[in-house]
Image (cartoon, rainbow, N blue to C red; front, side):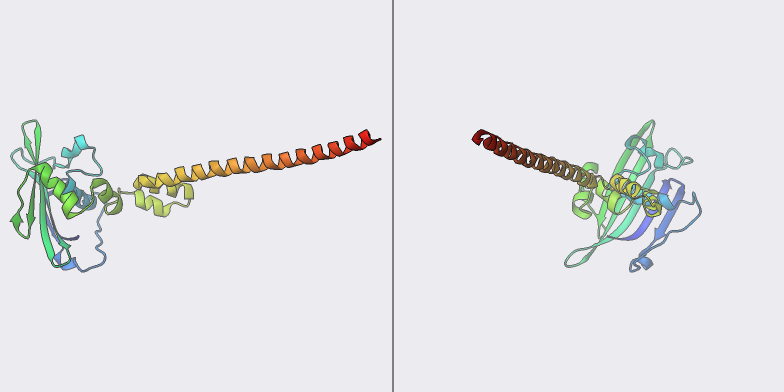
Length: 224
């Protein structure tokens, strides 16, 4: 997946912004820099919102918080991204636009997908499933753990000198890693049992030796 363009309207701190990345598509790294509050993270929020109708910093019921505060009632909020995906034979350009409209006290969401300029039909849920299952082949959880990491967590991981803290941060980002802690606990439990068995076995041998010695003494006394 190579990003070509990001467009945000009434989204976060952006009134109407278009970021053209076509000249940077072949660059191995793209660095976005700016002062605190300048909207760097909002660009990432826009990408995630367009693809999944979710944003890392907001809970599901607060997702409408992405709407710019001074947006007029009849103005829509949207995030649109254009990206390229390569298959075995050609490069395909997709456009995904996620729209939020405020109608009275209700929020109405819709999504539009174009493949090489041709709009794909279907309802919002069907099109959303196409994005995760067919286009990207990863759901929201996987996308936000392997591609767009939660803000600050990876920085905390890099700066931490405590192995235990680094492990805990990794487990927050990748919950599946917790299975290895359970495996380790099971192995330790088995080893302790083996250790106890080994100790018991040594005690049994000592008792057998003492018993053999006593039997020898008894035999000698009986002969006398």
